Image 1 (cartoon, rainbow, N blue to C red):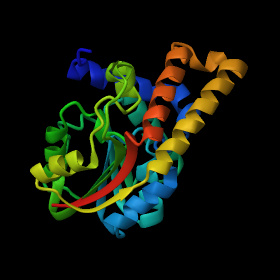
Image 2 (image 1 turned 60 degrees about the vertical axis):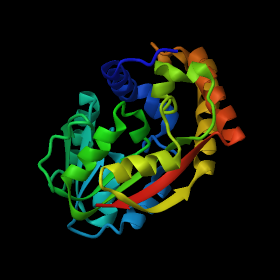
Image 3 (image 1 turned 90 degrees about the horizontal axis):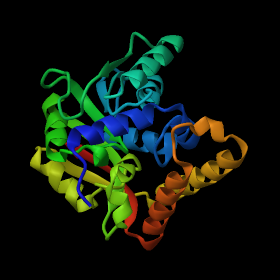
Length: 260
């Protein structure tokens, strides 16, 4: 199957994750492991009060707000979806966090920040969707201060995938261009980010796939109007294919911490 064009991938992913139906399926955190794994990532990076932290592909801002509230950091979030950025900013303002949490529209491959701006950068379940991963990693390294830390949690793929997962639906499902942990390590290392910690959390991926499938089936019966514009049949097919890959061990989930 022909790989979709980079701008098509970015636009499709940004549009999909701004859809309210996504929140119904994935919950506020929108990634495997939820807030528990976000806290584990923050602990792995040793986040400290008053540090400045960037969340790349921040979505509606759940991670940035959690880090500011629980770790005392000054957080910025950047996302390609302007509706997501607006929603995140409104949530921060309503929570009284406007002074310590800010959100920006921007591309992960062209981050809208000066060099050496942040003490730490996080990216949860999104690095795998970036069409140009070496450039995204280089951008993360660029905006980090010397000695700064980068942390990602993401889907891994180590075996062959069904060809139906190679199209846009597979990109939106965060699996079409997922790599092995070794490949992610090589990409980060190529950007000057030395991996200091790598943990498997495959159970978190399987748990989330099962939750999504159950919610899809429930909403298909009870509230199909919530998914206007979404082909529930295709969504269930993608979920089944992802579940099969995870069960075989061809797909998993990893937490990685690195240092510039």
